[in-house]
Image (cartoon, rainbow, N blue to C red):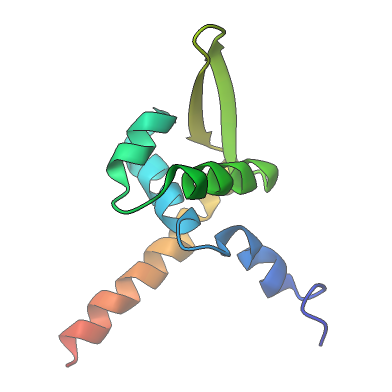
Length: 104
C-alpha cells in the first residue's frame, strides 16, 4: 500500500509533528488566541517551531489565521470546522494514556 494514497495517512498528516496536536487542543479549550498566548502556554516550544506548526495547520485547513490589525500586525488563530472535528479522535487518543496508567 502506498502511504500517500492511504486515507489514514492523509487524515494523520496534520498531526505529523510534536506540537500540532497540542496547538489543536489548546485552541479547542481556549478558543481564538494570538501567537503570544499560544506561545506562552506551550512549555519548551521555540518560536520557529510554533511558527512552522501554525503555518502547517493553516495550510492543512485545521486552523483559521485572521489578521485583526495592520500595525502592529495582530493575528488571531482559531479552529476551523475540520479542526474541531479532530478533537474527538484526539480526545480518544488522550484517554488511552489514562486507561493504560490505570491498568498498571
